[in-house]
Length: 355
Ligand code: FUB
Image (cartoon, rainbow, N blue to C red; front, side, top):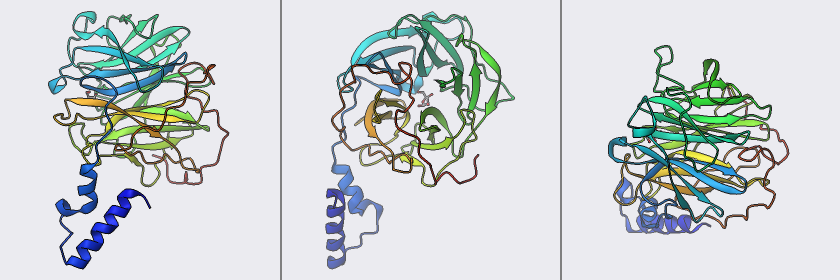
């Protein structure tokens, strides 16, 4: 029996035998016990959020939002690691205030990818989405367009924030984004222009922070629910057979939510250790002890799957299991790709109506 369950049972027995009323939420022994658990340490120094993790050539990188109060953020930096535990601040890669012609503030929630030896960095600034390019994963990045790639549009309700980029096995690239609604554009091979209008593919209870990866032929779409300032900010998912949906949502599809002192768990990303079926989730929480929805910190946790392909629940109070050594020849697919190396399996739970 897990230690928490043992303790809960013990406390419940005490409640019953002593006649104490244990119904008040503040008296819930499980919740009280959870509050005593020391949360894992954040992995990046300072206040950061919306961590987007990638793997290039056997090295891990995290591109986060550099948090400032009221989300008045002005620049982006990148961190690198070879072991997922020790992270080096590689410095600023884009200064929103000085490097863009079309925005000076509110640089939020980036996404990064490599194609043909060039590195592409998608980000929101002043509720528009831009793209910047570099020859190195640690920048600096330059805006090749001199204007946003995506601007708000009354035909597409919701905020133009929180981009996510993905290149499928056939080479087609997609740019997903949105708050309130989830949209997907096809990107041209140049990665800095859009191919046609967007597809709306909003799943139920979607708020923002879309992320997608592919495993065993299924496209796993993940997103954040509720407002980022809410302690109930949490991560949910659905799956599709296509990169453009529709998305089918399984029952009980929230896989990461507040627990104990850890609240506001969301806007995440996922990496697969190349050549393995080991997965990690990177997410932010309200900084402990004095954070908020504006002052957050980046964390990592193990992520896994049930035998039928469902994503297992992530425990934000669990310490990281020993990270695997990065394989010497890492690439299963292109570096930074997320194609699984395990065989395909049926997903009998994938029977609900797609959205
Ligand atoms: O970091 C600013 C905003 O907060 C992001 O765009 C949202 O996803 C939320 O995390």
